[in-house]
Length: 115
Image (cartoon, rainbow, N blue to C red):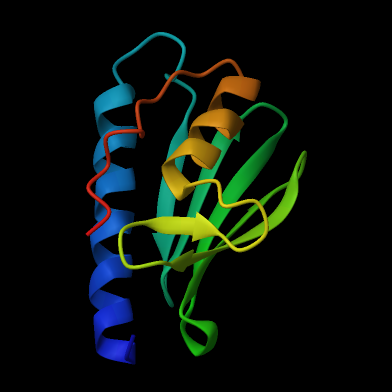
């Protein structure tokens, strides 16, 4: 995948994550959830348990990196169909769902269009 294709795919998944966060923001359990998109393609999500989740694009490796205080860091690469963890093969939406669930927040990310 070239850099332009990576950026397009990363933009799409970041936008869909933000839409899911916006949709969940009206719920009682997610009312303290806040996110901010920072320069360089970094998405910081706060109000998730005691820490925050950072979703970052790593252009050089063509990966999306996710870091959470309770779980550590994970790298997701495009496999032609979706974003998969480079070690466990878990999808990016499934992993984010797990992080939110651990904090007691239900946000539906499993239906994200990963193209």
